[in-house]
Length: 112
Length: 115
Image (cartoon, rainbow over all chains, first blue to last red):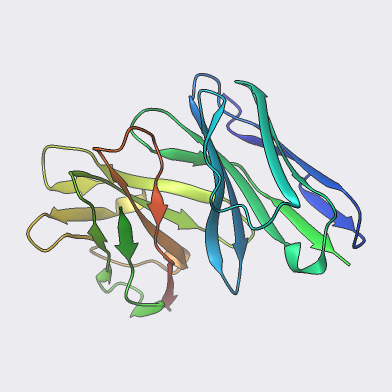
């Protein structure tokens, strides 16, 4: 298996633009997680899905953030409009029943 | 509710010496416990986990961790540190009584192995 795949790996955009981050989980995993990592706040859970259903989105910082999982093999995290304080590394992870999570390589987002 | 604490932001150890990275947890039921490592500009990588059974868990790269239920701890250890072990280490916990796979991560401990 190729592991968790994220795209793009790097994204540079201007304030106010829409940003879409993509994730392909490991085949057969039934849970998917979106995290954000910054020096100031560390690793933060934004949202997670179980069997494609959003379970807990309490970590989503604002209404500008939205996430979807239309099927078991694909998820998106969208920021609209983006702001400089959204600059961070965004990780996607997937897991099976025991909670051992497999992380993707991350998307480094820079909002100018 | 579940939580995990890593009391040390940074641990420094000389190469060849034993290392310990501390972790304590809080859950209402029984825990699943994990350690992850993150190298610069990389995602988190799984090191080891405790689900049930033997309290001493062995993982990747010579690391091990001991589950101590009475002290609610799951410290990461290695007998002899390598410079290449220098990285950011995260402890994580999942409450088994929870219906989903949500895992709570600690704030991370930076391990610096000094040559």
